[in-house]
Image 1 (spheres, one colour):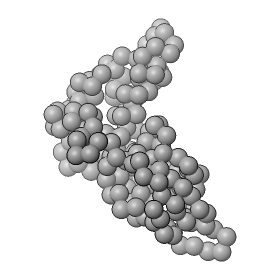
Image 2 (tube, rainbow, N blue to C red; image 1 turned 180 degrees about the horizontal axis):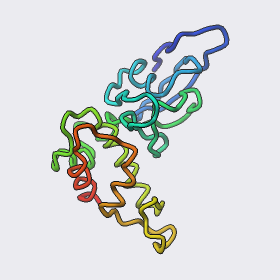
Image 3 (spheres, helix red, strand yellow; image 1 turned 180 degrees about the vertical axis):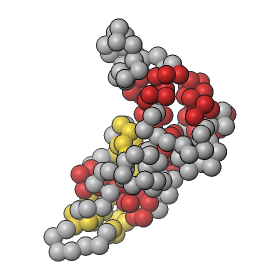
Image 4 (cartoon, rainbow, N blue to C red; image 1 turned 90 degrees about the vertical axis):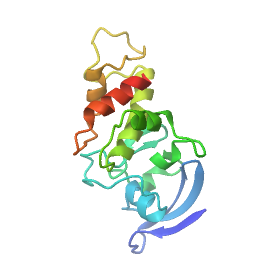
Length: 181
């Protein structure tokens, strides 16, 4: 599938990029300066990923690239040729919700919902990082390297500290993540 050209093109400033977004391949002609966030929202119509600060400071634009959580506002799309991108729209299977989405609903871990897609994508990444034994600043220094990291309240708060919520749903977000660990 092709999404056409995205960005204001000048001679020599476009590249062909192939991305697998939510399981579907896209052949794109992109301005070399366009961010992944803009490709997702404006080029592919995936508006679940939000544009918050556009500076990588709020986490509203968090998506998964090759399974790792990233701020999509900071990534040039042309640097991701061949990458697998998962947005909040691509987490569930069919009409079913992803377990993280279910946990957020069960714990009422949102208010206005603007930050929720980024919080959910970040949580998916956090769960995988902890399961693989990646430490954070809150991880006990005596924790065995490479062993799964238990997700305590402090560990969850540290790992999700790059995702801001102006409504203050943090306690319920921590509870939702704790339910999944």
